[in-house]
Length: 378
Image (cartoon, rainbow, N blue to C red; front, side, top):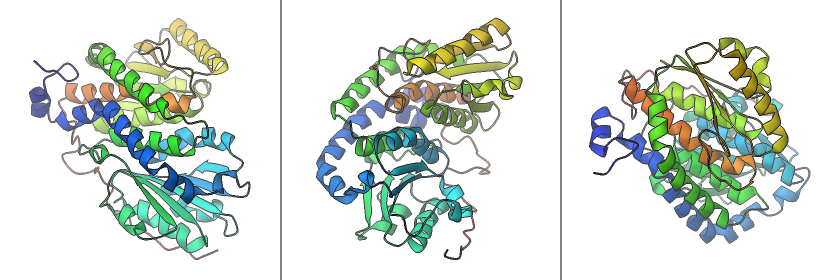
């Protein structure tokens, strides 16, 4: 009998979680499809980008809201270190409220928007804001929905390139899963000067193995009820920790409190939340110095014995694989597979419906209720 994360598809359907389960499981296949899509557009993307990345005065803004913002945060420092231009991750929610802090009329600007549906009010409003305030700005929209407002807004505009993800990545379920990892890998593939096409195939193979190897132990871990979950990560993995914590909050409808922090920052106050009902999960960095700092905190938490459990995700971790020594941003989609499964099982254990945990509609798959206010040009 076919099983999907320790349950049959029929069982997931009855639990209201089949879409989420399938969208987590499909990711390695979608990464391969994404690689083929990117190969077919490599020349066009290169022409669109031109020399902006190698221009010191140019500003690259990675933007989105919620999970989409975290995708930009994960890769921003990696890309910034690789090119002469300035690369920053600035959420649409910050751009809209305080544009004068981030935009300069005289600076060549490329806005890279991450959007699953492209229908969130902030997505299109942030692009229009930059268009109004920064002459000659250009826009690369990385989106999963060809029919979304963001994609349609840029259609036919020579200053805009719509980079569409594989169609199946436009997740039907409430939480972003395959959309997140596809958009993250797309941006890395386009912006990383050291990118090799074989990387995505290697990652897909590792992802398939990880999904198989972690299925039973993650389900077993999630069967243990906790009140709080802490995700920790260093450097780019701190933003991955934010995404992992958000999956818990979303899929448990806030019944399980989840927070994210850095390994070194956790001692500076947030550690106070740890008690016997707290699960601590640390994403292990591929950087050897970062791993030493992480190891010290792990040893401290184990000595303290104040958490229900303290486990690791990453190379050599409790949930790990023999991954290449790549930059943390490239390995982030692999490690996220564990966190996505864990949130799915927690939701089911709490007898929620993972595909739509907020039956009351108080929180929506596509954000609603946002009024956009005009800023005067500066």
